[in-house]
Length: 234
Image (cartoon, rainbow, N blue to C red):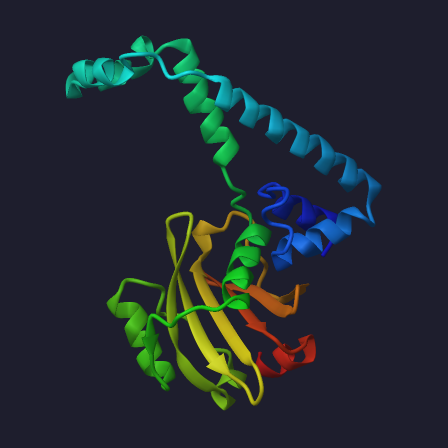
């Protein structure tokens, strides 16, 4: 993981809450190697703390609920900001900025790896690649993906329905001899900085990934094995 990728992940970091998560632990390790990144993180966490303090200090005006209900007419909904008090308007805007999470590919990959790194349940079970594809299609998830040819040697366990900022992600869960392998498929348009057609390899915690884009879909192939294993599947 380089400093740019670590910075994207740490934009969503909550001190004392996320430290044990694999992607955050790796990103934090990078700050110990990069003084500039460490200074940025110190400034970022200080700013987040200041914003949280500001949010907690804003008192909700008495009678706010009554005023909202009294003025919530469909024809005049565009005038909402005109009658909200400055303090409440500041609260809404600041809260939106504070809770905004990164949307880049590195953050997406980190979130997907985080999911399979912990205990999870299959949304449907099957031992067939074709049935897995049919399951995704039935539920409106990406299903016109192309399975890397080497995956045919693996045993399919089932699939999971994932979400990324409102976009659907198909997850095919497979099993090698002594560990798991996963294929994530998302719409290219949901990832503003999606990887190129040539696979990009990365390691997050104990998970190694290969990421690439083909047509309108972006793929992540992940394994508890190593890069050489992934290359054998592609």
